[in-house]
Image (cartoon, rainbow over all chains, first blue to last red):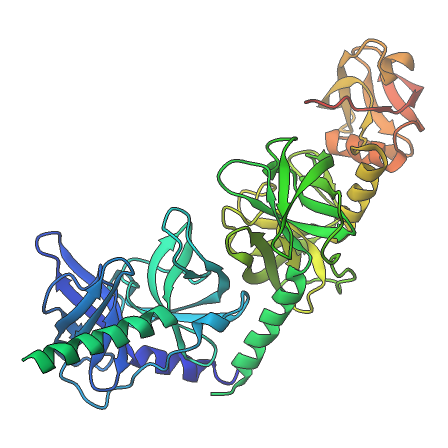
Length: 196
Length: 293
């Protein structure tokens, strides 16, 4: 089918591997998404467990990241790497998702770099016992190491950050929460720069 | 990026949205709700094994409201239960799906109170003819689904890509895969349940054990006879070897059940038995299998 290969390839290129040794709890390895071409990476807070995690791009280049901010409630973290002109994600409208839509996830499950999995949107809503915040649940098969990686729609737009596996379903933080988090991160950095 | 993939994705989402107008959440067990489909106006079909209580059953309707439902009846053999709504709401499912074949795409559409409609997708991995479940019921077709069954998937509506109903999803009829209880079976069981609250199954009132006869033919030896049961009334004795029912020879209990189904409760059937090496014929009026609770 025309479009599938292109979507998959573009998704792999904006997916990074995040390696942080979690301060004695074993080395954490997860995934991340290049959110801005200037080197802003979004991942899960539970993946970015050190202040300077290593970030590996699809083409093998490796950078030492700098932790900019994290939100442990929403399980998001922002990192900066000193790249430029990187292939960045286009955020999809996560409020317009419909059950049954095709989705693709990319990540580094169990250490395999650039693995893809496909499925459909299962549902959008809260998870039992995890507060009122919304999650994008999908039928993609995730494994440890997918955390922090992108969930994209058929256009290749990133609609969420894969975060957890709940009763076999992939649970992703919706893109609109990521956009808000990135906006807050940038505002904080501006505030710090002005104060300095 | 506009592409065929996006068009196909939209098409699937629309089929789910359409089918979702006929899908309810069923609250009749602890922890996980299940789903059900509005099969006819005010009549909901769900998976029997997800109904764990007979009272205080509620459903979440396609408009998001909750309404009490009453259990009209159920059939463990086919894993179907029928609920009735006091105030019919929602759209009945779209019937008349084209014949399904292995490889066809299938979507299961469910509902939860918190998140509304949910969907999973996969393919039909096997289709065969009439199939007897381990629970003793008969499905008109065996439709095996290669799609992930989640804890609340049972009772979901299984549709083809046009949104037409293939059946009701259940995880309780096979250990290896989800199964769609075919629409034709749903219609048949629904008619019986609405008419008398349960599905009647034929009953002879004998305990049978398959045996091989000296001439390499097979039969079933009568090990027990229920007093005043249908076979006892016709004169069956312990030690008789049942070799035919109606026009058909019988070699195992599946053959017996098939013969009883073909005739039906209340009908008479000619039973051929061997007694002391001699062939005899008994005319048995098929009874109704007592229902366990």
